[in-house]
Length: 245
Image 1 (spheres, rainbow, N blue to C red):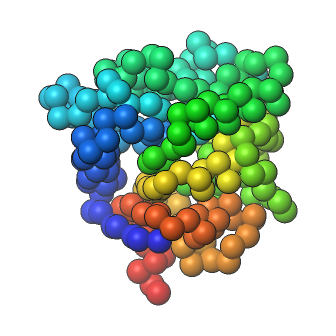
Image 2 (cartoon, rainbow, N blue to C red):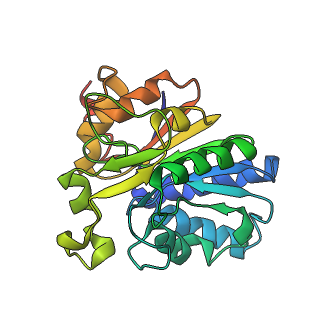
Protein backbone atom coordinates (compact mmCIF):
# COMPACT_ATOMS: atom_id res chain seq x y z
CA UNK A 1 0.00 0.00 0.00
CA UNK A 2 1.18 3.51 -0.81
CA UNK A 3 0.67 5.87 2.11
CA UNK A 4 0.16 9.64 2.01
CA UNK A 5 -0.06 11.70 5.20
CA UNK A 6 -1.60 15.20 5.34
CA UNK A 7 -1.56 17.80 8.08
CA UNK A 8 -5.34 17.95 8.57
CA UNK A 9 -8.54 16.22 7.41
CA UNK A 10 -9.31 19.27 5.26
CA UNK A 11 -5.92 19.06 3.54
CA UNK A 12 -6.48 15.38 2.78
CA UNK A 13 -9.98 16.08 1.43
CA UNK A 14 -8.73 18.95 -0.74
CA UNK A 15 -5.96 16.82 -2.23
CA UNK A 16 -8.24 13.86 -2.87
CA UNK A 17 -10.85 16.04 -4.56
CA UNK A 18 -8.12 17.28 -6.90
CA UNK A 19 -7.04 13.70 -7.51
CA UNK A 20 -10.58 12.72 -8.46
CA UNK A 21 -10.88 15.77 -10.71
CA UNK A 22 -7.76 14.70 -12.61
CA UNK A 23 -9.12 11.16 -12.92
CA UNK A 24 -12.43 12.42 -14.33
CA UNK A 25 -10.61 14.76 -16.74
CA UNK A 26 -8.50 11.85 -17.98
CA UNK A 27 -11.56 9.59 -18.32
CA UNK A 28 -14.87 11.52 -18.39
CA UNK A 29 -16.75 8.18 -18.28
CA UNK A 30 -15.05 7.18 -15.04
CA UNK A 31 -16.94 4.69 -12.88
CA UNK A 32 -16.50 5.94 -9.34
CA UNK A 33 -17.22 4.04 -6.12
CA UNK A 34 -18.26 6.23 -3.19
CA UNK A 35 -18.50 5.87 0.61
CA UNK A 36 -20.70 7.51 3.24
CA UNK A 37 -20.12 8.52 6.86
CA UNK A 38 -18.56 11.54 8.54
CA UNK A 39 -15.09 11.17 7.01
CA UNK A 40 -15.99 11.89 3.35
CA UNK A 41 -18.13 14.97 4.11
CA UNK A 42 -15.18 17.37 3.64
CA UNK A 43 -14.30 15.52 0.41
CA UNK A 44 -17.81 16.03 -0.94
CA UNK A 45 -17.65 19.69 0.04
CA UNK A 46 -14.42 20.05 -1.95
CA UNK A 47 -15.87 18.23 -4.96
CA UNK A 48 -18.89 20.53 -4.87
CA UNK A 49 -16.60 23.56 -4.96
CA UNK A 50 -14.65 22.13 -7.90
CA UNK A 51 -17.85 21.47 -9.81
CA UNK A 52 -19.21 24.95 -9.17
CA UNK A 53 -15.95 26.48 -10.41
CA UNK A 54 -16.10 24.28 -13.55
CA UNK A 55 -12.91 22.42 -12.62
CA UNK A 56 -14.65 19.06 -12.64
CA UNK A 57 -17.44 17.81 -14.89
CA UNK A 58 -19.48 14.83 -13.67
CA UNK A 59 -21.89 14.80 -16.62
CA UNK A 60 -20.57 11.50 -17.99
CA UNK A 61 -19.37 9.97 -14.71
CA UNK A 62 -21.09 6.92 -13.20
CA UNK A 63 -21.22 6.27 -9.45
CA UNK A 64 -21.88 3.26 -7.22
CA UNK A 65 -22.21 3.63 -3.47
CA UNK A 66 -20.89 0.95 -1.16
CA UNK A 67 -23.88 0.22 1.04
CA UNK A 68 -27.32 1.07 2.41
CA UNK A 69 -29.34 0.32 5.52
CA UNK A 70 -31.81 -2.53 5.19
CA UNK A 71 -35.46 -1.57 5.52
CA UNK A 72 -34.78 2.14 5.00
CA UNK A 73 -36.26 3.71 1.85
CA UNK A 74 -34.20 6.16 -0.19
CA UNK A 75 -36.32 9.14 0.88
CA UNK A 76 -35.82 8.47 4.59
CA UNK A 77 -33.56 11.22 6.02
CA UNK A 78 -31.36 8.58 7.67
CA UNK A 79 -30.70 6.62 4.49
CA UNK A 80 -27.31 6.73 2.85
CA UNK A 81 -29.04 7.77 -0.37
CA UNK A 82 -30.46 10.84 1.36
CA UNK A 83 -27.02 11.50 2.86
CA UNK A 84 -25.45 11.46 -0.60
CA UNK A 85 -28.17 13.71 -2.03
CA UNK A 86 -27.55 16.27 0.72
CA UNK A 87 -23.78 16.23 0.56
CA UNK A 88 -23.03 15.62 -3.13
CA UNK A 89 -25.63 14.53 -5.67
CA UNK A 90 -27.86 17.62 -5.33
CA UNK A 91 -24.82 19.89 -5.58
CA UNK A 92 -23.00 18.64 -8.70
CA UNK A 93 -23.89 17.94 -12.34
CA UNK A 94 -24.08 14.17 -11.97
CA UNK A 95 -27.04 12.87 -14.02
CA UNK A 96 -29.52 10.92 -11.85
CA UNK A 97 -29.49 8.02 -14.33
CA UNK A 98 -25.76 7.57 -13.66
CA UNK A 99 -26.21 7.28 -9.89
CA UNK A 100 -26.40 3.69 -8.65
CA UNK A 101 -27.51 2.73 -5.16
CA UNK A 102 -28.61 -0.34 -3.29
CA UNK A 103 -32.33 -0.24 -2.49
CA UNK A 104 -32.60 -0.81 1.24
CA UNK A 105 -36.39 -1.11 0.95
CA UNK A 106 -36.29 -3.91 -1.64
CA UNK A 107 -38.68 -6.76 -0.82
CA UNK A 108 -36.10 -9.39 -1.79
CA UNK A 109 -32.68 -8.44 -0.40
CA UNK A 110 -30.92 -11.34 -2.12
CA UNK A 111 -32.32 -10.36 -5.52
CA UNK A 112 -31.40 -6.73 -4.90
CA UNK A 113 -27.79 -7.67 -4.14
CA UNK A 114 -27.61 -9.74 -7.34
CA UNK A 115 -29.09 -6.81 -9.31
CA UNK A 116 -26.38 -4.51 -7.97
CA UNK A 117 -23.62 -6.88 -8.98
CA UNK A 118 -25.07 -7.04 -12.50
CA UNK A 119 -25.25 -3.25 -12.68
CA UNK A 120 -21.57 -2.94 -11.74
CA UNK A 121 -20.66 -5.51 -14.38
CA UNK A 122 -22.72 -3.71 -17.05
CA UNK A 123 -20.90 -0.49 -16.23
CA UNK A 124 -17.60 -2.23 -16.93
CA UNK A 125 -16.53 -2.43 -13.29
CA UNK A 126 -15.41 0.30 -10.92
CA UNK A 127 -12.42 2.35 -12.09
CA UNK A 128 -11.72 4.23 -8.85
CA UNK A 129 -13.12 3.12 -5.50
CA UNK A 130 -12.99 5.60 -2.63
CA UNK A 131 -13.25 3.96 0.79
CA UNK A 132 -13.49 4.96 4.41
CA UNK A 133 -12.42 2.80 7.34
CA UNK A 134 -14.50 1.83 10.34
CA UNK A 135 -13.05 2.01 13.82
CA UNK A 136 -13.35 -1.78 14.03
CA UNK A 137 -11.66 -2.28 10.67
CA UNK A 138 -14.76 -2.63 8.54
CA UNK A 139 -14.90 -1.56 4.89
CA UNK A 140 -18.35 -0.70 3.58
CA UNK A 141 -20.49 -2.80 5.89
CA UNK A 142 -18.14 -5.78 5.79
CA UNK A 143 -17.92 -6.27 9.54
CA UNK A 144 -15.24 -8.25 11.44
CA UNK A 145 -16.17 -11.94 11.35
CA UNK A 146 -14.77 -15.44 11.09
CA UNK A 147 -15.47 -15.38 7.33
CA UNK A 148 -16.33 -12.65 4.83
CA UNK A 149 -18.90 -12.65 2.05
CA UNK A 150 -17.30 -12.10 -1.34
CA UNK A 151 -20.07 -10.28 -3.19
CA UNK A 152 -22.82 -7.78 -2.41
CA UNK A 153 -24.84 -9.20 0.46
CA UNK A 154 -27.10 -8.68 3.44
CA UNK A 155 -25.20 -8.20 6.68
CA UNK A 156 -25.80 -7.67 10.39
CA UNK A 157 -24.24 -4.55 11.88
CA UNK A 158 -22.12 -4.59 15.01
CA UNK A 159 -23.08 -2.38 17.97
CA UNK A 160 -20.00 -0.22 17.28
CA UNK A 161 -21.05 0.40 13.69
CA UNK A 162 -24.60 1.22 14.73
CA UNK A 163 -23.28 3.71 17.30
CA UNK A 164 -21.06 5.32 14.65
CA UNK A 165 -24.09 5.88 12.41
CA UNK A 166 -26.58 7.17 14.95
CA UNK A 167 -25.83 10.76 13.84
CA UNK A 168 -27.99 9.95 10.80
CA UNK A 169 -30.94 9.06 13.05
CA UNK A 170 -31.09 12.08 15.37
CA UNK A 171 -28.55 10.35 17.66
CA UNK A 172 -31.15 7.72 18.56
CA UNK A 173 -29.32 4.40 18.67
CA UNK A 174 -32.59 2.46 18.77
CA UNK A 175 -33.53 3.96 15.39
CA UNK A 176 -30.38 2.73 13.63
CA UNK A 177 -31.15 -0.42 11.59
CA UNK A 178 -29.54 -3.65 12.70
CA UNK A 179 -28.92 -4.87 9.14
CA UNK A 180 -27.66 -3.44 5.87
CA UNK A 181 -26.78 -4.27 2.27
CA UNK A 182 -23.13 -3.93 1.27
CA UNK A 183 -20.69 -4.59 -1.51
CA UNK A 184 -18.57 -7.60 -0.55
CA UNK A 185 -14.80 -7.53 -0.24
CA UNK A 186 -14.31 -9.28 -3.60
CA UNK A 187 -16.55 -6.68 -5.25
CA UNK A 188 -14.41 -3.93 -3.72
CA UNK A 189 -11.13 -5.66 -4.62
CA UNK A 190 -12.19 -5.88 -8.27
CA UNK A 191 -12.05 -2.09 -8.56
CA UNK A 192 -9.11 -1.07 -10.73
CA UNK A 193 -7.82 1.48 -8.23
CA UNK A 194 -8.59 2.04 -4.55
CA UNK A 195 -8.04 5.08 -2.33
CA UNK A 196 -8.77 4.76 1.39
CA UNK A 197 -9.41 8.07 3.18
CA UNK A 198 -9.00 7.90 6.96
CA UNK A 199 -8.90 10.74 9.48
CA UNK A 200 -8.91 10.93 13.26
CA UNK A 201 -6.88 9.38 16.06
CA UNK A 202 -9.70 6.96 16.90
CA UNK A 203 -8.98 5.21 13.58
CA UNK A 204 -5.21 4.89 14.14
CA UNK A 205 -5.32 1.32 15.47
CA UNK A 206 -7.42 0.15 12.53
CA UNK A 207 -5.07 1.91 10.10
CA UNK A 208 -2.13 0.04 11.62
CA UNK A 209 -3.97 -3.28 11.40
CA UNK A 210 -5.03 -2.63 7.81
CA UNK A 211 -1.48 -1.90 6.67
CA UNK A 212 0.76 -3.90 8.98
CA UNK A 213 -1.44 -6.57 10.49
CA UNK A 214 -2.12 -10.11 9.28
CA UNK A 215 -4.66 -10.83 6.57
CA UNK A 216 -7.72 -11.74 8.60
CA UNK A 217 -11.53 -11.46 8.34
CA UNK A 218 -11.39 -10.05 11.86
CA UNK A 219 -9.88 -6.96 10.20
CA UNK A 220 -11.73 -6.79 6.84
CA UNK A 221 -9.65 -3.82 5.66
CA UNK A 222 -6.53 -6.02 5.80
CA UNK A 223 -7.76 -7.69 2.60
CA UNK A 224 -6.82 -4.52 0.76
CA UNK A 225 -3.24 -5.79 1.08
CA UNK A 226 -4.16 -8.14 -1.80
CA UNK A 227 -4.93 -5.29 -4.21
CA UNK A 228 -2.22 -4.16 -6.62
CA UNK A 229 -3.17 -0.47 -6.69
CA UNK A 230 -4.14 0.88 -3.26
CA UNK A 231 -3.35 4.27 -1.74
CA UNK A 232 -4.06 5.15 1.89
CA UNK A 233 -4.61 8.88 2.50
CA UNK A 234 -4.35 9.85 6.19
CA UNK A 235 -4.26 12.88 8.39
CA UNK A 236 -1.53 12.98 11.03
CA UNK A 237 -3.84 11.72 13.76
CA UNK A 238 -4.90 8.63 11.81
CA UNK A 239 -1.24 7.93 10.96
CA UNK A 240 -0.05 8.32 14.55
CA UNK A 241 0.53 4.61 15.25
CA UNK A 242 2.46 4.20 12.00
CA UNK A 243 4.97 6.82 13.09
CA UNK A 244 6.07 4.68 16.01
CA UNK A 245 7.27 1.94 13.68
